[in-house]
Length: 86
Figure (cartoon, rainbow, N blue to C red):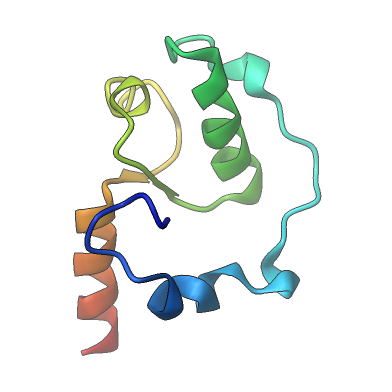
């Protein structure tokens, strides 16, 4: 998160509470359509946790339609969060 310009960790830290930690099974091998093997774990985690994936990664964004999860850019995520609190 610290590497994404414009995002403030203090503001987003609430999204990373210990009680929100996912400890279930993930299957990165189910995401071979993502060119970079190191990125597959993120799609696997979002799928297993049934939560949107927030990323700027081009390998993942390029497969948005092939992956059965919601994928948002950080900008889209922040815009949605602002609408949810209004």
